[in-house]
Length: 288
Image (cartoon, rainbow, N blue to C red; front, side):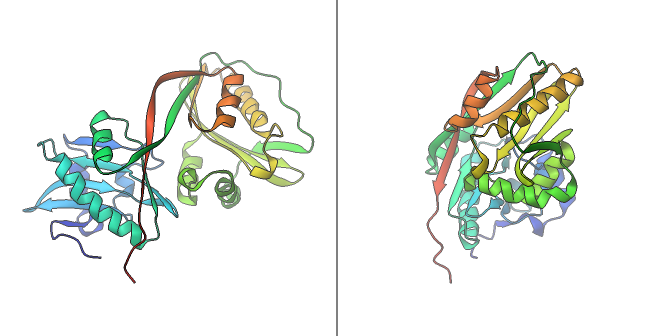
């Protein structure tokens, strides 16, 4: 891959130097990612703009599952040159992503300044991220579904959970085994739903004090509209009530009507602003 001399993969630099830069007084966009920026520095798709021996900016576009990738983070000096730095790094990232078979690059540009950058780069608004909250948790009646058994998730379940996740979501919203494992390790409640002996759904949620956040809820397509998602949600609410947790939040996207219907019918209310989900379709690489 051809790239300007001033741009190199982050893996070419000392990790401690990169850490010092990303934790400095920089201008930062950070995706709602499963991993921290420091955990992305050694992955493919992370590039550094380095001029005269000085870091100017870092951009990470590590793919999650082909053919999709997300902009993970963009960290740049506060010197007024962030638009130029982004344009240079994005051009290299796109070249790299094409070579890896990525055809869709997504961004969740919550800061206004970053929304302007991706818009100028040709991204278009595809959807919106919606935040919802349930402010008073009480134990609901548990949902009975014939042949359904809900139990805790265990580490040996994770490959099957990954396969279910890939079946349940479009490529842009799928997560890989690394992200699932990381989320499993950092969540305090992990549930699986088994119908007639087959894994049919899963849920992951984290707690902090008297608040909880529902990180992931998925049901395999063949078992959707059978009440499995509601059964998992009600089981979560039961466990949160037992722990005296007061509130529960969740994010979903505006076009996911089934998800919005589940949450709003369970008492969730939309809170805060909606944020744009933007996409850039990449042409196939001309390299052979």
